[in-house]
Image (cartoon, rainbow, N blue to C red; front, side):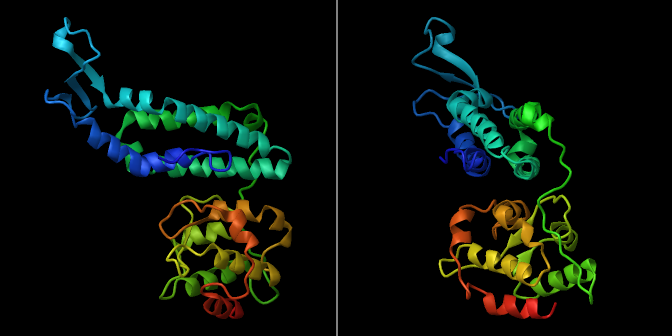
Length: 282
């Protein structure tokens, strides 16, 4: 089980909705004792089972339990921690107006991402919990006093020869030539590089020798765009937040450990020759 932290307040939910939920649902229908489980509702997942802790004079020690009750009982502390870390993160990012706005935009996008999980779509109690977190975020005094006037997506600057749309189109075409370095729709890519709100983000497909997504190459790519004055260098102090908002790993998951990757400066990361060629064509 992954636990949430101040740096990754959604770590538990990402793990549970992708992995933990399926494991728990499978175990819910497994009885470690010989007494059989009686399924009362296979849609809401309600069963009747024997419990050694129940009053044996009532229904022979059988109890009725729902999967939702098991979820709440087992993970109540983790759910509370998730909210607490979100609240602390909002406070931590409220030291400056720009940082606060960027983080709240990230939270908005993250909630959209959580709602796309199959478990949330199929199980009302999980949907209600995500709605509860949304309400919790929206009810924050800091949130209520913040107008999300922009989102932390990149904004390609036009040159004397080419306008923004032309540069974005060329970047997308070259980055998606086989073998692709990114995975997303043309529309999503355009949003990610024209200061707009994203729906799902851009998957970065460059892998390192360990077969994991190579984030150093991603920072290399963005830094080279800054050097070419195609992206305003003013974002450099908040670069991690921009990368986190716009990009995902090769599996479409949130990028982790961005601070370490940004600090790992390299002039020849994985795929740098291909990236250099693409940038030279702009």
